[in-house]
Length: 458
Image 1 (spheres, rainbow, N blue to C red):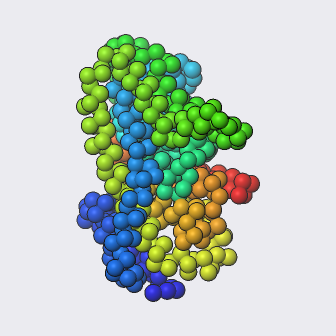
Image 2 (cartoon, one colour):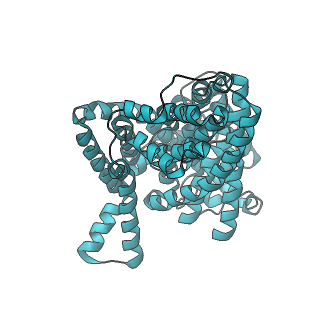
Image 3 (cartoon, rainbow, N blue to C red):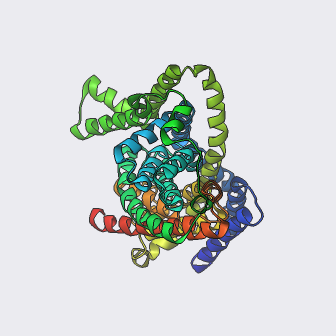
């Protein structure tokens, strides 16, 4: 099969996958794997080659990013269970000040969601949001939207959240994780800014039950923090996040300066993502020991593996789909029309991720599936090559574009939508005015900023 028939087949395959996941509630892993197998047969890949294609696409994902995703998620679990996530939130509040509660909760969410899933992060931080709302009498809706936006931004852009790690590994920039983190922080800025202004705007238009009901008798902010017991100190709370970043930075410096000998080898060793995140886990164990919760480490690990398992398998299934697309000749057809595609460029992965996100609800599934479709920067038959995105920097910007698409938009088929509306005491119809609209605005702001960066950097 070739030409326009390939494109039509590809579009139908994606549509079938989306309908299976969103309409018929088929698990994303089964939907993606099933569509990949059927697509491989329809496009004419020799039957004897299909098992090898599926196997290589699946195993390649685990080889590149499986351990990294597990270690990053384990760090997040430790921060959550030891109270370190709350300590980080408290540090942000003290830094920003209670006079700007919406800004405080937005930055608080952005910091906490770097290692912790946004759903869990909202549940963890919502009591602080409510206590601050009681203390300041600021708009509850504005603070809910700001907290949600802060959490969501780092969730889709910044490792060690599993989605961005998976995308970086699949696109072939897993060894440049420090660059992905730095770029994620940079791209977060316009998203956080537009979310801040929209939160204040919509807070004047929409009222929650917290705004309409006089709340009294609840715990103060300080009382709330005390109710969690003794929190870890600031350095220990931050160390599982900052130490891997430092290790990767040292590895990058060693590479740039071409350090030789034992020092160069050691810096290169600790700078690899697997070892850097292992260092983060070791500092997390110190946190556990200080909190007297080492006995819970086995249970935490089991809990983390249960959470991460589906993500790993969906990510691997996305790799299979990408491999099938590459072997089908679809990319070759796209390369023949590279001139037309060059006008799409960085917007292509954004649109694919946005369609997948809006259709089936999960940002992580949208990120990993889109990354699988795009393929690696070094693969001659990948969509990245077809679009001319073949440098490490282009790979990092593509990770950002996929992340921006994966936040566009959060609505009723997204579990996070219901977490935000329920904990924020919002009606479902108000959720569309707040959560759905802010994610749309952030996604568009993000991709515009990424496109501007690509004009100067690529």
